Amino acid sequence: MKSKFKHFFDSQKRPKVLVVGDLILDEYIWGSVNRVSPEAPVPILESKSENMALGGAANVANNLVALGCEVYLVGAIGQDEKGDRLLKLIQDRGIKTEGIYRFVHRPTTSKIRVIAHNQQILRIDKEDNRPITAETEKKFISFINKTLPEMDGAICSDYLKGVLTPKILNAVMHRAKNSKKLVIIDPKQTDFSAYQGATIITPNLKEVEAASPIKINNDADLERSAEYLIGLAKCEALLITRGKDGMTLFQSKKDPVNIETVAKEVYDVTGAGDTVISVFGAAIFSNFEYDEAARLANMAASIVVGKVGTAAVSLKELNEFLEEEMLRTSKTILERDDLKKLASQAKSTGKTIVFTNGCFDLIHGGHIEFLQKAKSLGDILVVGLNSDSSVRGLKGEERPIKRQEERGNILSALKYVDYISIFDEDTPEELIREVRPDILVKGDDYSIDEVVGREIVEGYGARVQLIPIVKGLSTTNIVKKILENHNKS
Image (cartoon, rainbow, N blue to C red; front, side, top):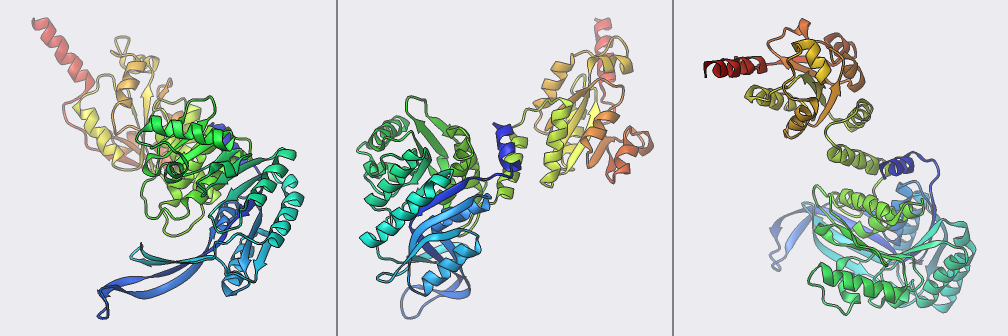
């Protein structure tokens, strides 16, 4: 799966996507609240700045463009000032606007959010939710029929603002089926039969509860609800977003796939659903399996909830997040080539790599303290571990006492050690050349000039640091004491 993710980021070809749905202008008023009005018990916002962003289906298109997709947007805006602003924002993002039509009889849908100290305190909606006219429907259907066959897939973003009428939805499903294209829907309607013909539907937990007659109290209830809705919509899969509990992918005749959230901090969930369907869709249209696409979308959601306001996730942000996750979840004992790749990934995200090496034959308190101090110098601690043959060459035929596999497993259990690589050479010089650590660490029982690899790291601008060791504690001394006590007995 990771190799497929890598191909997704490296590929120059991006999907062409048709996005159909409700276009919304998101407006933000930012300020601070320091007092209460004398006129009424309400806070007074001292306005500092204002800005506008793409919302609804326009935000889905925005997220897709941030991933490098070519996007054709179908929707409607008012013949008003807000419509002018929204259209300009869409055009500035490079989104194709031939499928956008303007109303005379109703305003552009807008949401004004008032934010104080990075916390939303008020939202004002301006909208007309009546279905679009038959005349506008015909224009949409004509554009959809002409454009969809040239796309890699379609996304319908339903905000119940009147654009996704039964005729529009039927036109999308019919044209997609005839041209063998996938359709993904972010739903708002409580009757999922309206979405019959969709490939995948991406509701949140609240939307599932509203659409299903089954009361959801546990995972078994959720699974039965998903099965019911898949049958009702005749779709292949349901990807349910569950807030802090991540998301679950349900497919017909397959076990559910639970994906835990990996969000570090949550500031604002505005537009998170738009990000999920955008990344999920871009991956699906790039031939990802459904569960792979869901995992990528979950990562994107984890990024976007860490931002305030409606926001998109860029390809660069997603790639960096993925690399951090690969580093975090990778196994500890690595082959040299794998360690080299991980070290490069870590450096690309600004991590500091600390390197040390040794036999670590009998782990004792001195080792623990040394490794703890080494780890504190950077973000990632890599330990070069002498192989059994290497230890014998250095210490004699009686050593090591523990085999390299056991020594490696013990080291990997220590929370201070991130990665281990076993080397056969007498010295770790080749390993150091491959890893290129930022800091090379040894105990202060060595002098700087005696540290193997010093010239290598100083040659590319890194440094050597000596750490005080616990005096009198060494594997050799421990072995000697054990033998002395054994002989006495």
